[in-house]
Image (cartoon, rainbow, N blue to C red; front, side, top):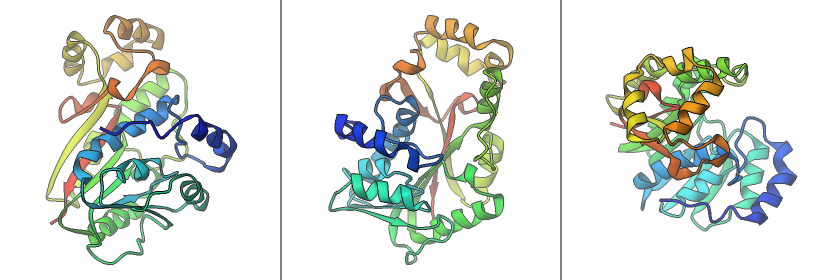
Length: 267
């Protein structure tokens, strides 16, 4: 399992100086629950990358590519943002780690250059047309029988939660997907795949109740304050207290998850 030891106080000082440069990209901050929520997916990916040539397509500020490079043979992180790539180059330095500014839908690599591609929280930023280009490009640069890992927020739960707390949906997300649309997209490009969901852990009783809530009624019928009381009773930590180990990624209860993840095999 990957850890956050590298994100020390020195990193946090760098972050405070650079927060203004990145739009809609997660800045590494081990005290930020949004950052922790993203690192969980890189921890999940870590089991697949050992000794592999890895592409992190849409690497943002580079923290995930850096973490994967601790297990992979090599990692190449690409992002369309010059500022994000500059941040990554300034803050992450390993012999097996490379960063390049590049469009995720038009990759400048040879065919079958990588064993595996990881690409988290990208599809919601792309039009359907560009999304198809993006998926085709990853299939092109990954070797036969290689893996492609993709994630996106579960819009089925996100829209209900945001509505309940009176927060608008992120304007940068132009291609929001629930489980049905996400699965349809993946199926149109891959014959072999498995869908997973990332969500919070809780007590056994909470797990049973949540497994029954396939319509996400907890988000539709109960106020945030009511849910907070319920979550406390179900042994779920407050958002400000969450750590990596408080999340789980599994292949069931997907309709109720926060984030959708697909592991796709390239044939």
